[in-house]
Image 1 (cartoon, rainbow, N blue to C red):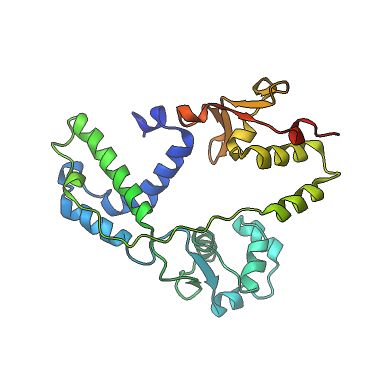
Image 2: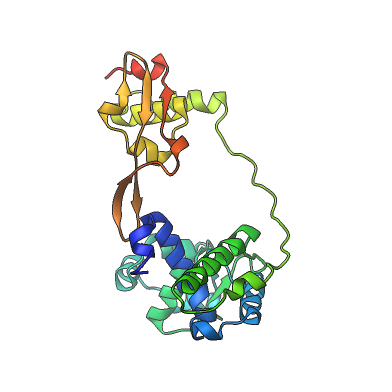
Length: 266
């Protein structure tokens, strides 16, 4: 982390890497010395990743036993005591779900076990093939650097095959049709110009959220009706607002605006 990752990686990438390390890779392999990690350790780790109950974004429902535990207690006071939004308990009482981390936080506060108090909404849900490959790439990358720094002689991940995982069906593209766009633009009438401008520009150009957030006036040419993307801005947890260059050379580009955007009136 100190010698390479924090110096070389973008904060948004680093956040994802830390999550994979802390939540899965280190619990599985962190107790082993580098030189002792063997292909069979890696294989066991990969097989575990394909099992149910591994996903961190699985949704959990409260059991009757937990609902009895919080019966009569104020949602506001519970939220303040546990440092979660009060609506979390309204969701649980109405039969809706919360994320694993939230359920775990609540159980830690009450000093109770997850089992018996929360139950997974989709217990058979597993990690995608893409997610397993992300863990494989990160593990291999770390051990490659260990080789370069003469900490180990070879990379055991190179001698392991990824398990066969059925590829999930691609999600159907979800976008507004002409009628929905028209309804959105009609609803924007009378709203502050900054909100109208952002949404008009997004619909008109297809710019990413980080690109829209990174715009400054010097990037806008009203005569040529273009927006030139040279930077992006995004919020990264634990880091705050980060400004930087587009991820690739192709991200630096000029995009044409229509008169619909350039002629927005106050």
